[in-house]
Length: 150
Image (cartoon, rainbow, N blue to C red; front, side, top):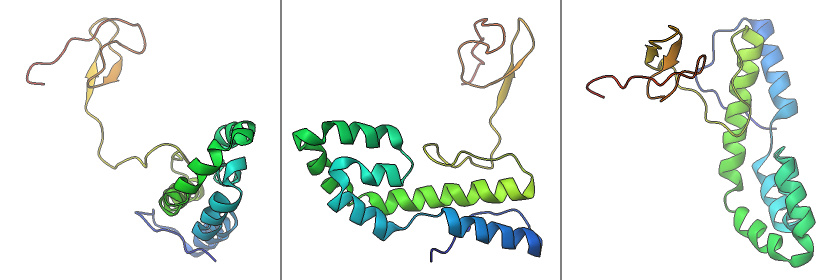
């Protein structure tokens, strides 16, 4: 039984908390299972299928005849606990955001967003708000002026 990783979860009532824990217990991954899959069946990509990374799992299965994925999977076994913890943390944030009605965050493959807002600029051609640091406007494609002092 995996305990959820509590980051900065939004406030929930008892019913939401029960739904959160039930959903988490069903979807969370185990570090031990991930490591064992990487060691014993990793050459076939089982550990990637377990972590919902089907593209890499298929790639490992295709190249399993060469033996190279078995060597790589053995090395990856040492990194599996960290990957599983990251997956479970992002899963926890996603479930909490879905239950409380906030915008969901990505489940896997992207970092957990920070609470700090990104600085924005406005396009001089169309006036659309864009994130600071981009070179072109995402709405009209016009080049963005670099602000002074950046």
